[in-house]
Amino acid sequence: MEIKTVKIEKPEELNFILGHSHFIKTVEDIYETMVNTVPGAKFGLAFCESSGPCLVRYSGTDDDLVELAKKNAYALSAGHSFILLMKDMFPINVLNAIKNVPEVCRIFCATANPVEVLIAETEQGRGIVGVVDGFKTKGIETEADIKERKEFLRVIGYKQ
Image (cartoon, rainbow, N blue to C red):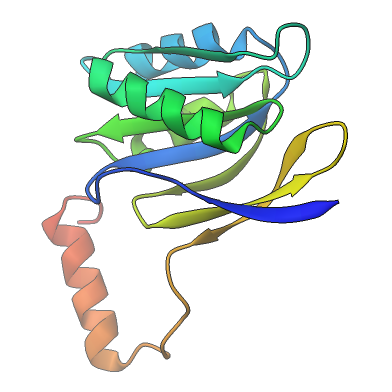
């Protein structure tokens, strides 16, 4: 077995969800979940099929995001993984709905941070071991940091 890292390629401002699923139906079900949860959502979705023809299956509402999702999924080439890239929205808006898609087994990350995906490769194929989401912790928040965090959440409308 060999452990490799694959960097997710995306513009800094894009959020994404990386997950694991179990069935080709994932592509259509996540698509339906996205358009029903956030009308007008701009996203690209790609899914790594792990049996039969083992293709990257894809869908979405934004051609550029679909192309980027396909590129990242193919770079991962990890069985039954999916990547959902989102524009002008946050994972928090769709995360629970995505987790409730019957085929979704787990979410590895939901972030806009730079991400490195740890891939285990065997003779049989590839699987996601985990992710490095963002950067190493630099310290513990101070009272001023707490105040800033609370103010920020209210400015962006997630708390009152």
